[in-house]
Image (cartoon, each protein chain N blue to C red):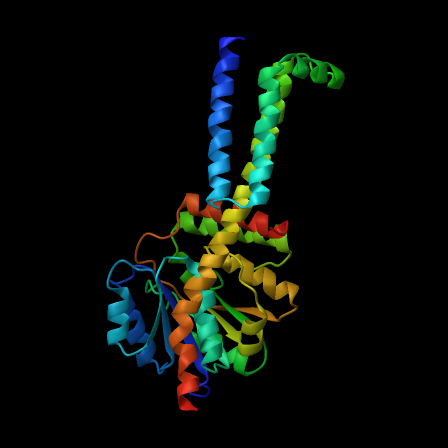
Length: 226
Length: 115
């Protein structure tokens, strides 16, 4: 496929030894060779397993959180000359075949940022447990109220950036609110952002209620400029 | 002298000596040290001449001198708290930048090797 060599996949991983191997293999099987794993201070074998797969593994010696890991990965991809950057979760919730759908609008210059939405397709939406659907909807509404940009999936981990967009976006938070922050930044910098439907599997426990509250408080601080 | 005054006096003398030691050992900057010393001296005055708070309180329309002290201390603690939270956030950001630099070190080296 076109532009495979110019695309870099960034995989932030914190204690994902059970799934990181499968995730990397899946990406490679679909022809994605440029993979950067950010081992965000894992205490398990995440880094070791990733290294065995022959991908680039960058280690945060202390856990800094999702936002920080993404920024490190994106910076690395930019240093390595990436034209297109895709972020991909390490917990095996995404399907590697969806990466293509993320990259295409970027190559066709239809968008600067592409968000893979788990809620655009009905059958994919059904795979998401109800409580996460409600939580996500709440965060979507808050993101909209604070930053004036509607997205059907503000917390998606599968996103794509052009080199220009990736260089322009500033990620300030170290933590989970990074997903909403990216959307806010896109709006502020007047970048074209589109959503494409993606599939998802929910293998295990993800974000809980407390983590949702934490995201909201970070977003509030961000809005008032702290 | 009231027992509470003696206790206050001893306590304040201990923290004043402590602050001076910290300044001389450079554990805090001279500026910060002077700020703290000023606060201790103010408290010392209040302990030695308790009547003073009554006069100031009345001037401000607060009933009792003790209330004034409590209000001021709460305010002061909140200011310190705000400052500390801001500092911690700054340290967090700095830590992340440091950790990121370390993580990216190998990648940044590679292009140089090629040259």
